[in-house]
Length: 248
Image 1 (cartoon, rainbow, N blue to C red):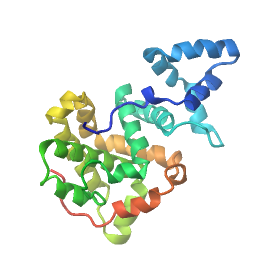
Image 2: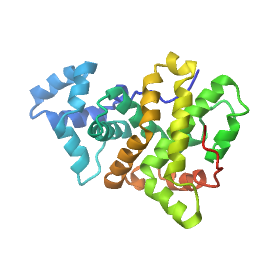
Image 3: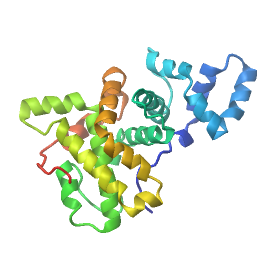
Image 4: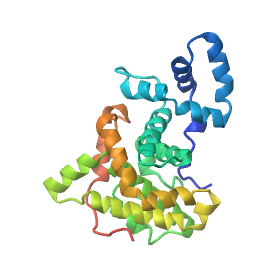
């Protein structure tokens, strides 16, 4: 079975997620019962998840909300992408799922669970692409694209700090690798089979804009402490020595 990120945040809302939606959008018990029925309809659910009141709660709540990373990232990513004119829920769902999965460090290390392929550094992924079969190459190329979007989106300031202090690759390098990787993944037959061609095409052509929007979101809203506590250590490993390969 091919294991790649799919746009599935909206379909994987937890009981706590639904409870938050009810608490925000319903003023009494009868409305909560109606909302439960409405949330079972995917089209109506999508409209409810776009409600400004839900967005405000996630943006402005001073305390810790008991919601999944999938709901949190979906609502916020949808918000920032719509500001770019990207009013595609499936695209927002995919990007949110990338953030939710890569916020768990195990996802970084095992893009192909059945094979021991080292992916601690970006250059290792690029090197592995020259030695694997066609299907594994697609998985790794997709992983590389998502990985660079995650790093350059949520940790842009960290990357720039390393560039200035250590001469490490900057954001332009990650954007080049990300664009090239999404283009290569887009043109693969498996992207068509999995229904990911259009998503990859948008991310390839607008990578820098999406990355910048995620960076703005991260600067204002996302903290390292809210993600996997092992993330900082993994981040240091992932941003180790890099090759000068552009990813083309």
